[in-house]
Image (cartoon, rainbow, N blue to C red; front, side):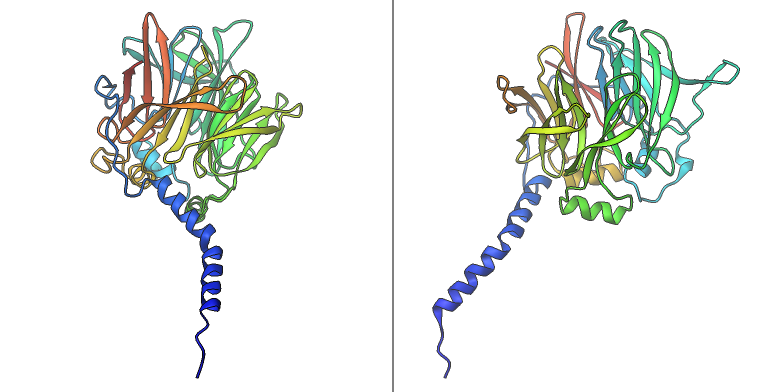
Length: 389
């Protein structure tokens, strides 16, 4: 007759729990990240309003000129974005009846398009002839003459990703193509940080192109992302690797900030002499996923636009309508640096349960002619939102 050994059973149970603890913690973290079982209520949305219905659609990123307060928006066709936003999905080029567009917006809600042109060998300006699928972008202002601006756009062209660079003179109604660059190191760009008229940092959000592998990598929170650097001579290098889905990127003075989606946080870096990035610290978001970052040039505060329910956000990206997912939601956070330490005090400026807009990807501060507000854009919405500050 076998003797039941309580001690062995308890020890075996304890070992099993210890072995499973990392998986349990990862599952718990993943459920928190996707907002499972959580309900959110609107905060500070009553004074917000929608702008540009049907025109300002798919405005994933917004940059504000610190010299004038004019806001620049990179916008695009929702039907086309629905197909190329997630690489590996079925793609239908016929949906790209309209090229993506760039707009400039003033403080009175008026806006106008800035045409994207290229110069022929004969010196004639014509419409930009390459494919244009805009994602994140940034602007470099010439220190000697801030009226001269260099726009750098993440451009998801067929068969490869690229960065398209244009030159622009303030108040003109067009910008001129300078170059479009692509490299194997720039395999999955999401956002970009302009460092000069040619140099930039860009985030590669994930390693794989195939939809299934991208999904597995994201769901398992694998650290397959990176930031690459392009110098003034056109050479590329990996500035930092091993980031879980890096997304937005911005800077203030000598610090560069990168949003990590799968490890919800903002990473704080300093650039080394060789332009590699050295981690200084990070600020963790326990229950929302950061997308794009906007740094207020007046005080260095970071505005982080975050997803509350990533599963609902994923649904929205595959079927962009307000009825698809009214519960995806957005939280906008303001991060204020603690003295010179690589850490921040965090305050919530706005929570939208999905009623104002399904979800958001950028919140940029616009100050112009006594008006101070947040302009909120969304990669899969057919309008932008204005909220007073």
